[in-house]
Image (cartoon, rainbow, N blue to C red):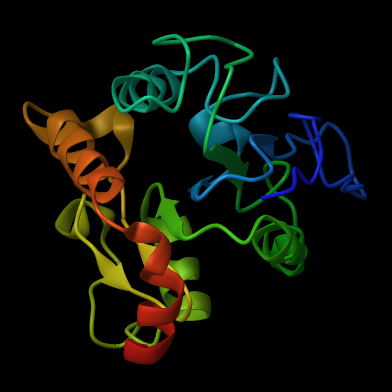
Length: 195
């Protein structure tokens, strides 16, 4: 596949109306898209990189490293392969209508697997990208590391990393490794049909 861009920070050139903003970061050709809430919840206000400078970021990056997406267990500027990080809100407290930036990134990235982190991103992804919003609890802890078929995506909910207990980190590693060992790229067609 042809590379969209070599830029890793804000590779799609999004312009937020307010600053400071924490734009998407990572491999613009990624199959795996991690979606957090915002910099206040998951870190990155100081670095400008999602999931940095926070306990949530440290734990999540450790998982990304374990499955081969990140070159190091933690970095303020992680070197990512096949993984993209972004937030539901580019900056804390922005109005809900600015979720359109995430929607634009989702379309531009065209990943196969969405990993919403926490209840707010999970609820948004279930409502907007699956037909199962009414059938499933909007509870990331209950759905942690499970597969949810979406409309054109496979969704793997992630509970708040700051709240992980024994086994939660490994459950996510195991799910991601199983997906990587499968033919997950066919998820697009299967999820669209099932959804």
